[in-house]
Figure 1 (cartoon, rainbow, N blue to C red):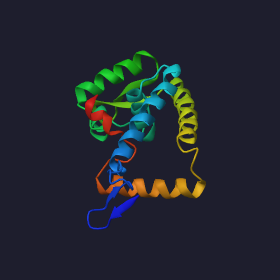
Figure 2: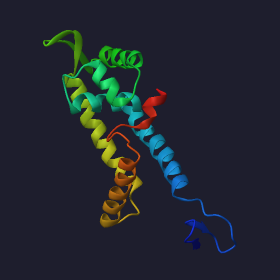
Figure 3: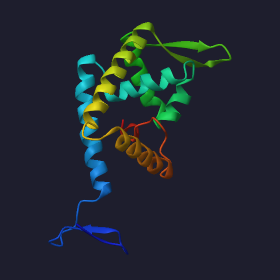
Length: 165
């Protein structure tokens, strides 16, 4: 591989462009998202529902509006997702004692147990995705990806796919 220092373009010895970091990130991101969805399916939860459970668990008692803002979701779409989780006994809405116009969101005990199973699946998923890397390589990659995410003002812990939900 040859790298043109002026444009940072990598080419193969035959002069063909190498795929590049952005493409590889997209490719691995799509692969990782699909594999995680496969892992979560037996638990009876979609990736969007998983992210919502994590958001509620990270700060119990927040309003639906606050969670929607964190995830970048339209409040009307969040209501549908909350309704689904509530009907499955995973989430409950409680009247906010400080502002009766809002509901405070909380996980139920069943929701907490499911989130623990999801965390276990996520750990297995990460181990599979990162299997060829050493511990120090994983740490360096995580640092570099975090730096890129921060530079592009991505919300920590929130999958950008919510904007399409």
